Picture 1 (cartoon, rainbow, N blue to C red):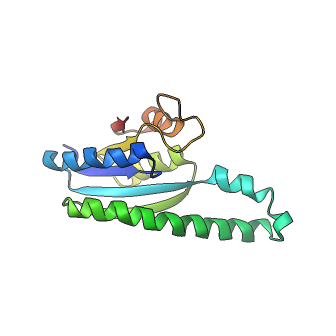
Picture 2: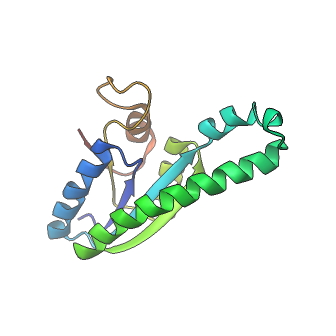
Length: 150
């Protein structure tokens, strides 16, 4: 039924909880998981406004910040990858830069995903919302089923 899973993560508690649901899908025939982390370009663009004060040119500063964010997130993604490999999945990792909803939906199509499994709320500022803006946007825009974990 669901052979290839996309797991977008921001490493929030809801995202961590989703891992156990992914493991349960193994019994339903799921074989492969793509672990995805999207570095939100909104965060980086806000920092660019202040880069001249730090003595950097905007593009140089952007590359420096992105390299650091990607490096930091690679370690966390590798931890998730290890758990899923131990559960018997074939796992690949993607770290992308852009608007999270757009990147999630684009990768779901590119990779011929069967289902997206993600946490309901991430690390965003509006944690009290029932459904986070990224999970809501993904549900509204994805062309595959989305399993949202609270």
